[in-house]
Length: 498
Image (cartoon, rainbow, N blue to C red; front, top):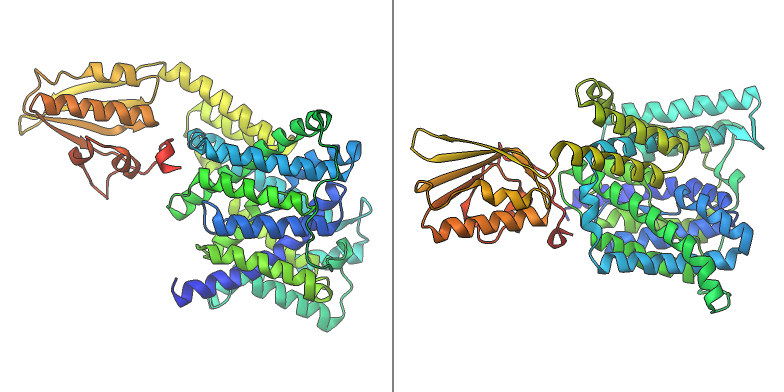
């Protein structure tokens, strides 16, 4: 890492740590556990996933998506059963990573991703309204105006400061300035301390105090399955999103292992566990952080807040953190998708809008499941098990196969039948400009075709394949013509890239 990258990650980590505090407290209260239970969970998940996970720069902690499931087990069976379910959730996530099932997240359609992003942006926005209330009622007008003004001030600083200087993260500067204004003028407004005290000691090892019987397993297993599924879904979809933003590739199987390990440790230290936080992850990425240091700094500073700085952190105005989260929500929402709705196929537009609404009205897992099922049905209907090809002869006398459609496990069987290596001329071109290679079966059938042309003594040229294809191909690797300006960039669901 360069000194500049170290500075960026360090200050971004501090900003993220500040943003983790109110979220962790709020989600702990939703789950009917103490604020420290959420803060310790954020520390463990953030530290372990940042150190060992598959996506540097991604931030994990206690989340609302899991809290709404946890409240049921806490109210029905008690907090010790929650700790047991978190440990088992971690074990299930570890198994997911061990069996390399992370590749399937690559098959979530782009329209579902857009709906997921837009839905979570709206959920984050709506969630901030709760900070403008007290006891379920809106704050009195004077307090409401003050808090709104401080929120607007925070947002203005975050938007305008980068035009003057990028020496420090605008979000961190905004929080410090607003906190200074409130302290300097003695302004009466809601602070982090109003949500609950964050002062505490080091987390203590604690085995869940539950009977080690089949009855206990019957109680916690259903909850652990749901928690593991939601946690992995939110984590790996966020990983995909950051992959697109940073034009890089994360490792979903490694991330699943880190999340699982983090939750096992979190459950054994009497916390509520968690998964990736899209809001805090976007804060980190928008600040320019791209390395593991940012998450490690965030976790260590969060523990430092608990041990040493609680009185100071509790004085931070909630309005500053609300303003930060509103900016994150605005930047997370895919505004371009609104215009694209008029241009993309109707079924894709329905998926984008449907997943967005279901995310807001129910939860992420239901929304993504509905979106994937609908997209799969549409895909199967449109593509069936065929892939189209047209042929022509170019100026050099080479035969060119122009492919169109998706090459995946269902269409791979028919793919090889489209070619005639024995009767084709000496040079043959397969043009993938209007085709997409989707999975491992597609890569295998391309390699098999390359071997047939080699055996026939013919020269095969493969054009406009993605970098993932080039990495995965074996016999056909040397036949790929790389054009960095024209080649498409998409990911393939394959264990070797997990």
